[in-house]
Length: 182
Image 1: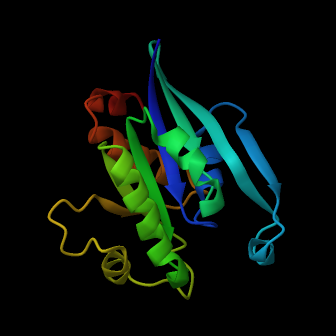
Image 2 (image 1 turned 180 degrees about the vertical axis):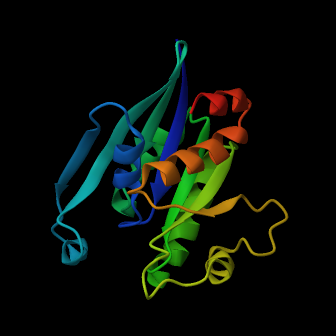
């Protein structure tokens, strides 16, 4: 059986764990702990190692989906999870402009380690404080990038939105034929 490895990374609260749970056909392995720092003001738990889910794409193909922690103190896990990845998605919360420079740091970290297809998924775009995608692209340093990755709106709570993001991502890989199996 062949497995494709997808990594879901991004800032704290962008929806990485929710994305993995929504995409997975199995019970997700979640390594979370109670948040004890400033993160506890907006979420009770935080990922400290990874989330893992799986989606069966056919008799001989599985999609392994790994969610990274969002905090930089766990960046050693980013390094472990991105190695061997076939592609990744960077989730950015459109309603958290204070996190845009940090999202750029995560993007740079991943880009230094792997040269694989990636997309940017904007989450929380339905929130009143959400900024327009153009403003976010400027903050991420991608606005004039001739190699700008695809940017799409993703609602990690909605299966069709998550599946669409995975389809877009997989179309960028050399395994694009698997998108017919969704």
